[in-house]
Amino acid sequence: RKDRERENVVIFPFMAQGHIIPFLALALHIERRKGYSITFLNTPLNIAKLRSSLPLGSSSIRLLEIPFSSSDHGLPPNSENTDVLPYCHVIRLIEASTTLRPSFEKILRDLIGQNHGRKPLCVVADIFFGWTATVAKELGIFHAVFSGCSGFGLACYYSLWLNLPHRKVDSDEFSLPDFEEASTIHVSQLPLNIFEADGEDPWSKFQKGNLSAWVDSNGVLFNTIRDFDHLGLLYFRRKLNRPVWPIGPVLLPSESRASVGKQNGQTSELCREWLNSKPLNSVLFVSFGSMNTISASQMMQLAMALEKSGKTFIWVVRPPIGFDINSEFRAQEWLPEGFEESVSSRGLLVHNWAPQVEILSHEAVSAFLTHCGWNSVLEALSNGVPLLGWPMAAEQFYNSVLLEKGIGVCVEVARGKKCEVRYEDLAGKIELVMSDSAKGKEMRRKACEVKEMIKSAMKDENGLKGSSSKALDDFFSAAMVARQNTLEGCNS
Ligand code: UDP
Image (cartoon, rainbow, N blue to C red; front, side, top):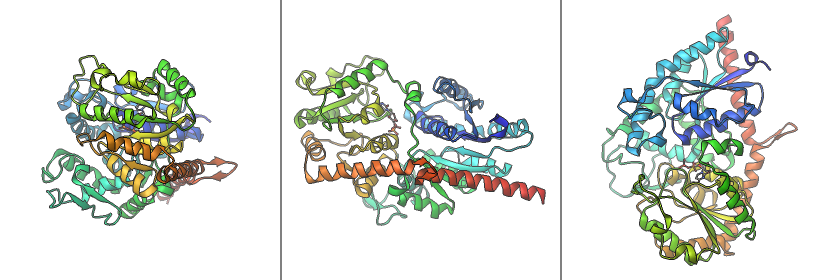
């Protein structure tokens, strides 16, 4: 179909790889449905990077620049993505993003003008871009927030920002006001020091404004599965009094992963060959996502745990916290003496970046030691791989709670970047999950059940639709109905 006959979906993620990647996956997912054109908005440097990520032939996705200059906001020049910023500057980029509002509004008006008055069908924007809902509402365009986080993880965050008095609590453990029974949170699981600043820290101030604008949105799309994340989804349904659409897992196809990550053909080949030589269900995969690293002493304990466990493993080794990024990283300097030789027959150390999805989908892999980033979780569960959780930041702590207590596919082995890890404990938990213990068997059974659950949620064939496919249908139907109502309102 010609572009002007297709319904246009405007997609707008925050400028961070962890946000852009799920939005790109969503754009490609929508594109496969046919009948839609996608306008993918971002700042110039991110758009330039994305041009190389889109698979050839993806003609229905139009990349569009929204003007932005980081130096106007006290940030270093060309700081258009959190991946070039130290963590303490991330909040400044988030605050600066609110100044995109007039340009965003202009872009929407231009799109309407170019399309002879026909409005985009909907705007799908980031969880940090509450203000886009207000702009869309003013222009009469349907709007949804898209969350790349789990429903439960985001609900804990949301509840925390909205409800807590933002001052120090008496005890180190407390329940989130909206989840009395379901979740006890420890202060070590909180994002930043929000208690210390009494609600006046920049994150709390930003979130208060951001989340209150969500009432202008028509609902929330979640990259999750209804069947195992219902508590978080229910929370938003009630709190916002809006529909939520669990449409996941929406994951990047492998041909697009190569350019958004740091994939390297040689490493992929090496991992594949290595895994091919290992027995079924025998390998532990260890990786902590794209941003997090552990401390030097934790690295040492992890190595000793892997040595003691006797298991076969792939470990994505990254420089420890505090490592000087200007110097060369030599892994052996941070590992026990002789470690690489002693595990050479059963351990593969990959430096910095591994082809995670390929690894997790290999039948030799039996378990995944992960920081519980939601993309990693979805990738593991889609392949029926049980987890050892080591949450380190953000909503990963709540994901770990959901996975362990709610779904039964995870054992938490450590918590936080500063926690003390003892190698004997870690080795014991690796043994528990990977061995034929009752717990290990039960977790593997559960993980396979979840894999099937995910498959059936995504089903879309011969008119038979799973819950996630149906949720995306429902979302588009709601947008169409809203458009129809607006047109009728104009005509009457
Ligand atoms: N990833 C990868 N290779 C690595 C590390 C990470 O392919 O060595 C990918 C991983 O497959 C996932 C993403 O990077 O898609 C990490 O996202 P996640 O939400 O798990 O964690 P984050 O990096 O945002 O903390």
